[in-house]
Image 1 (cartoon, rainbow, N blue to C red):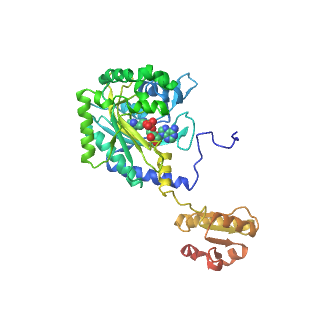
Image 2 (cartoon, rainbow, N blue to C red):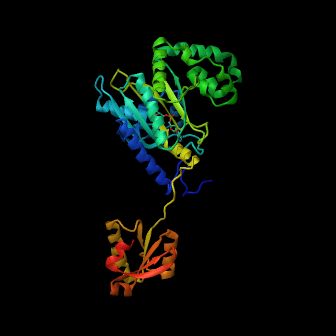
Image 3 (cartoon, protein in one colour):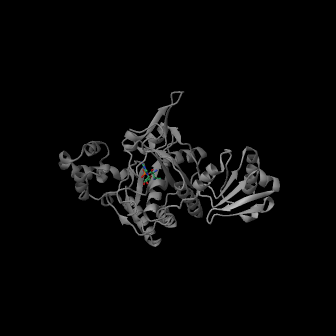
Length: 417
Ligand code: HAM
């Protein structure tokens, strides 16, 4: 039973030193994606529900069971974004993209899915994602995957497992669906309830079911790539050629279909042993979406990585951030009258940028109690200001590492820290 101060299941409070890992990751994200000409975009955390339902697909788990949807006061149905791509596409459509124009963006922020929480599966999780909208060339798919591998490398996540597949074009789908149905039909009675439903609604998803029985059956299912039309086969071939040319190691996984319905052609996922191979660090692909008020679909290629999963992978590789002390310099004010001077001194040090994290105790408690706080803060330097120090224009400086103590002129203290 969770108490009222605990965050809701599947959500977390993120404290230091964990926060340092997030900040570092955000910096590397801006640096690497910036080098590829991607600009940062921040879209709203909630959108009209139809932005997601239209584009992610009504038969996906996300739309069927995981969206946080609510009505606003005007009776409009709104949804907390379960992923970033649909909102980015809405924003790009709103900006207007002329024929032949491209827009390359990256984003980071919270996403929301009502999933069963576990270590790597959160209800509020965070994604870093990129979208290259209006880029219709297969070489762009290869560059996008290569950029993801470069980004992971910059984060210290070396040798990720890159799995790719093609879902072909919408016109290839009936033949693939037919072949899959012919294959799965005789086995249906042994399969899980989800797969029995998927057989009718979204037979492709039967290929990546996690149940043992279904997974074993899926291993021998017809390969999607063999059933695609010539155009799709050629597209996929060029993606693979591009990856070879860019030196990206990958594996073609014929059962990779991804959980969202907007994909065409290339789909890919990345796992790493340091996270555990069940969960993907990142996933993406090429997609097409049609925005309200327009008949022409917009195409793009992108991916998203879960920040929590990136950080878990880094921690598994020994790259967790080091803790920092709450304070580096702690100022003790002896007696109520010394507090303003202590605050002035703290302000001066902070403005000069010396003494690191500077904290002044404003409680007026006993010296012993304030020293206890100083110790707890981890500060290496303690400055003591009492009435006599103030009168003499000095500060007592105690070095906590060797307990040595000396008086320093008030004007010179900044240079001693
Ligand atoms: P996705 O595979 O649903 O794709 O999510 C991408 C990544 O977000 C996953 O690989 C995982 O790291 C992380 N993730 C997803 N759900 C959770 C969760 N409940 N808890 C923790 N992490 C999670 C998309 O969202 C697509 N929009 C990616 C994309 C961009 N495709 C094209 N462009």
